[in-house]
Image (cartoon, rainbow, N blue to C red; front, side, top):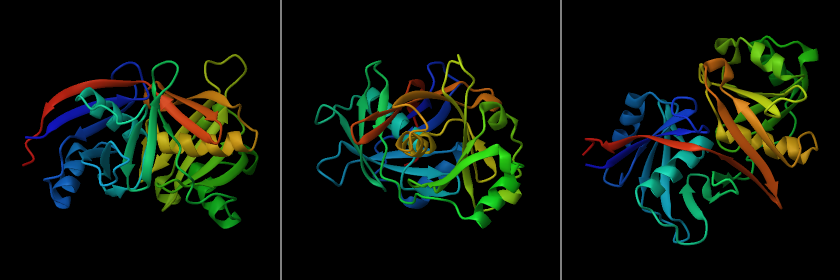
Length: 274
């Protein structure tokens, strides 16, 4: 039977981050089996580790939500890397290279020994047109004055990102998922002076709020740092309204934006999928 690991990502304490289910040695499993198991775990994502097809990669990962497969996602990248390392994986180079639907993603340990991934290039960026923005604002019950900026921030999942006037506005949102329709929306607002973190972040996708979202924070970092809105290095809080304590460490290093966080192994075992 393949090994199974469950990781809590973007937290240093189990139950306060975003959980990820990881199935190791999944190359014998049919696509239908992968999708069925992801539906059964009912987590935001479940990943399956396979041998790489690219010789530059250390492993290949397939990322499934209960509704389908994603080319890339952030917390599954960090959680899969932690699970692979915890199972005895040894990177070929000084850093780890993950192969996924979006290509090769580098993962390294930062100065505080946290895992961090290099944000992949955005598939879509730039302004959100007025009609789409009106739908998003209506779905989040936001007034025009609440929104300081909006941009496409799509690195795989398809995020529309909003910068709101402050963290309190972010935390006050009561989303109408039916009104949001097809849009996956991430919002960020600056914290008050002296706060532990620089931004409060929330993510709304497919009728649920995601606890802590690596792909969104990666795209937000590329946008906010690139436009001079955020400093070169900052920490974002996410999951507050859900009773979580997610902490996402974002840093620009040369041409790359790195997104990192603590990871905790919660469950180790085997899963009867063969």
